[in-house]
Every structure is written in structure tokens, then in C-alpha cells.
Image 1 (cartoon, rainbow, N blue to C red):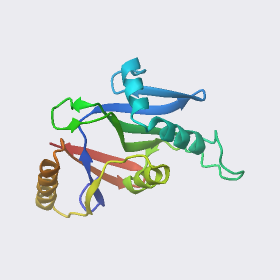
Image 2: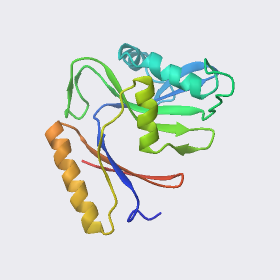
Image 3: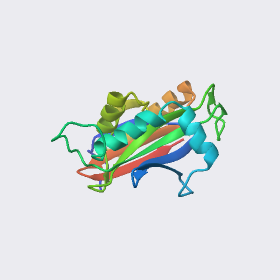
Length: 182
């Protein structure tokens, strides 16, 4: 995979707890990066964020389990990845939150086994009124020097917005390349 010459989306890196949300046997399943099942406390925070019902509706509709008209079979078997932003100081102390929030940063298509590109993630989140990480820039670079310049610009934005850093997302077909800078 070659990054140079590829379309790059630069998205904000939020400072929270990584959650994976999916349907398992028709029930909502919430996990963290390190646990197959999130603690009851994290599940409670996720539900209190106000996003759980919208995420579940998206998962059901796009898995073919609920409510869409006949013939609207998307069947992507989505898995939603997001940051759970718990009320108070964030884990790395970059952010302070007045309430529990959930912000999507990725969607996995389990039927076809790839991550959706950022524009599709944003589109799905927008349609279901689910918060999505902000995209601060889109572009292509031909040299590593150009890449470092763009990265430094994005890190300045992150600093100004009080964010942990930035995530670079590039795709070649269904192959994804992600990199973080803090």
C-alpha cells in the first residue's frame, strides 16, 4: 500500500474510551477495545449519551433486521466504532465533558469485510443524527515533506480545538490505512 498520491481524510482524534457496537443474535452488543463485553458502567454511559437508540436503529436497518421497505436490503452487517466521552475529564486529560457523549469514528462492513471510507461514515451518521468525528481536511500529497506539512497543520487545529490529535484515513479500494498523530 502506498500512501503518497492517495486521497487522505484528516479527522479529529477524540480522547475517550473506544467502543465497538454491533448486533449479536438481534441484541445490542457493546464492547471495549480490551473486553468482549463492556462493563455495565460503560454500557450505562453509552445509553445515557442519547446515541444508543439511534446507533441500534442504524445497525438494525442496515443489517436487514428492521423497518426498511421491501427491496431495501443493504445487508452490510455494520459494526460501529466510536469514542465514549464520559462526563468529566477525559482519560488523557485533553477534554472536559459536561455529559456522556458518543462520537462515531468508523463503521466496519462485516458482510464485505472492510471499513467504510469517511464520507460514507459521515453520511450514515448524518442520516441517523449520530455524532461523527469532524474531518478537518482532505487532500493528496506526493512527497513525505508535503505529508509532514499537512500533519503539522492538522496538529495545530487539534491543539486549538483541545483535541488529543488527528487521524489520517486513506483508502485504496477496500484497503484502509490509518495513522494517528498526537
